[in-house]
Image (cartoon, rainbow, N blue to C red; front, side):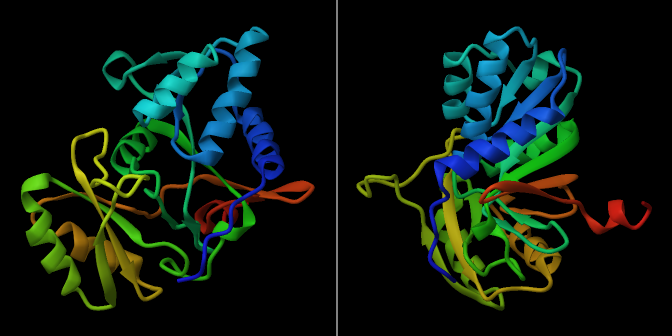
Length: 241
């Protein structure tokens, strides 16, 4: 697993500006969590102040607070029938656009919001691109509190799992708790060519409520390279062009 490299603010702003091209007035948007998503929320807020009318559903309390702060109307999934576009970041992107998400601790809500959207657009910087999932990030697994011990032991027995660690809060003084009141277990794995099998094995553990593999979900990945933005589309999209 390689060391994380922090993206530059300029690259995040560039990819966020490109993502705004996916937005039209009147849309209902899914608003992700993490540095790339927050750059997009700020850019969207500037457009809203200039007259763009949209409604957002946030994937975390932090993103909801930021959206409200920059003037975006925030609602809930109970109050909208569906979303037009969900825009979020990712922690890893494989060549087929399979993803790992959840280092921000919001992967369950991010999955629900992405599933409600007609399109799922992912914003990353180049260090997030990997050959195989598991190269640079652990797989976040959200677990109900009662099952933490059980899930830690069972996840650790899965082939190619190398470590299972309960995530701590940023200050390191207490366990991290998701907006859903659950724990996150960060599961380090040997890089895998079969993320679907890993995903199924992790989900089979009692008490697991979500796993950070996002497979076959991304419609477009925007990569904020220095000086430009690349567009990556999944094989199913390019094969019919």
